[in-house]
Amino acid sequence: MLPHADDAISRDGKSLILAYDHGLEHGPVDFDPNPSTADPERLFELASHDAVTALAVQKGIAEAYYPDYEEDVNLLLKLNGTSSLWMGEPDSPVNCSAEYAADLGADAIGFTLYGGSNHEVEMAEEFKAAQEGAREHDMGVVMWSYPRGQGVKNDTSPDTISYAARLGLELGADVVKVKYPGSAEAMGEAVRMAGPTKVVMSGGTMRDDKAFLRNVADAIDAGATGLAVGRNVFQRDDPERILDALEAVVFEEVEPDEAIAIADDD
Ligand code: FBP
Image 1 (spheres, rainbow, N blue to C red):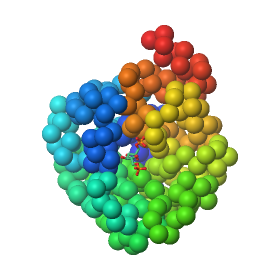
Image 2: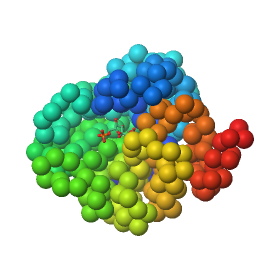
Image 3: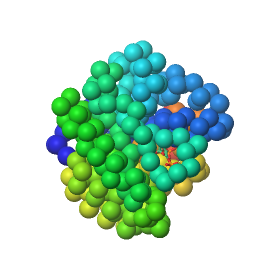
Image 4: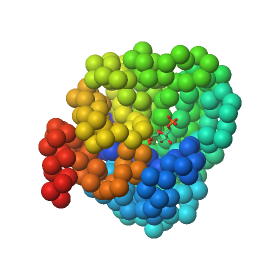
């Protein structure tokens, strides 16, 4: 990793990345709880919230919508992604180059690595091209480090998440995004293994306000520098309200109950 390479997608060293690649990764079913979020414009508007330091999208969405939002939104362009229609060993085809990401105005690139998959070797080689391309264009590098596949028995165990975080450091990510390993202690160990590479927590499936914000607060206490979140924001009836609360938890390190009170006052 390079010092400050993630500055364009961070505030005071912390990141709140709004992830919106679900239309590819999971399909339209993810928009059912809040149908307005099928419209990418709604997500670009959400990404204009002060709490959000970058919006992660795929190439097609960036091409179609980013020109209207480049003043207000920092772009984190995913360079690979796969649909849930794919039933084989975990893999994620590269659909965009770092050069093209730079042409689209990206501040950083995002790349999924499925360590432990039978496709890990090719994915790591593809990450090399993406990471070095990002360096040439002064873009940050965010790795979605999700061990899964034949070599992985439990993809959220503390050991697996520590290893996932370490892969980010070893392979040159500035920020590594990992699933929450179930406790603050395990998150702290993952952060330790990542060294100077910043660790952000993946949002995961929808949970109630308190449970979700508790996980986020614990991750921050354990040294994580933020989160990359999709469903726990855009599947809510009032996504702005949870962004208000997240802003308090991530950037002000306010406890979840107080953060909810702040959000309800706004
Ligand atoms: P969520 O906060 O909705 O979990 O989004 C984070 C993310 O990494 C997305 O970028 C991606 O689409 C999704 O999770 C992938 O989740 P999974 O691979 O576990 O289905």
